Length: 405
Image 1 (cartoon, rainbow, N blue to C red):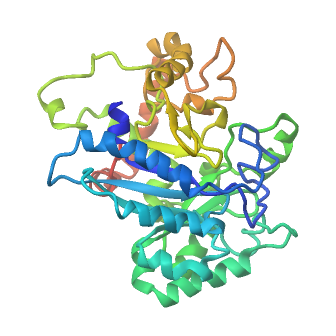
Image 2 (cartoon, rainbow, N blue to C red):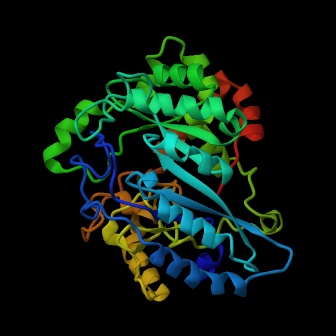
């Protein structure tokens, strides 16, 4: 129940419909593990039900004068295809009082409808994450249902937003790019930095949940981000610019955070050593530790990145069905499959989410990230060698990297 009081993000799958048919989409032919996409929209009735379910819990913990931010995220499909839902939900949240919560709004969008709704998004200070893979060729996997590249329309709409609302654009807009065989880290960075003065977040194709008959197709499209970085014309300058968004700096930051002994997650850790306490196995978030995700079918999940079969409850039009004890038992059934390996692992609690492990439904699982002491020492040496080569990164990590746990 503690996590229901305190999670930081409520995510709505606004619709499972999309005006694009991206070749590598997590809900397209390459992948499995999601509910059938049927062009459905999430009803405001269900959104109101889950908000009304949470309000009494929030009020139980309410301390007058203290307000904590909850990010309300609109996700798809393409969320702008269900704008009435978004407007009704925000109007309702603006009426919520005396819960100790205040709300900010986030959206991931392909920008195809941005020209129609940008005024509303700006008015409500949306944090926008725009999907753009680079120039026209780099963006060519993001096609409409007729197979036409969406680049020209997307680029035009984003430029329109930048020209009309320059202050908002600088403050609230970010870019997500997918790395694949038609682009590279350097070209993506140069295009988005050159056109929009932004540093994009660049991620490789998701390697979890791939259909067996699509593995070769996936491999042909996949590009390794470390290799892409090393193949760039000016690797050092690019790594310095993208910094925490590059694999080596990210790994170094995590190593400092987890193993330097100089990082304290809370004030109590300054007075008591909790390193010997028993922690749950694996690095999987506890249910609702960070967020709650509501699918277009009303399923309640801890995250939008995992198989829809792992739902904990359901939002109906007239009630919410969520058994926290059952959710905890279901979670424990999965993560404790790994416990014997975790006991002997040098990076326990620092690994992947088990729900993204394709073998999780099997009785006996071999953790793909198991690390013995020798491997850990080699990893440590690798990070230290990297730090010796770029010692100024240590100060930059301390000053520029913010860990959100």
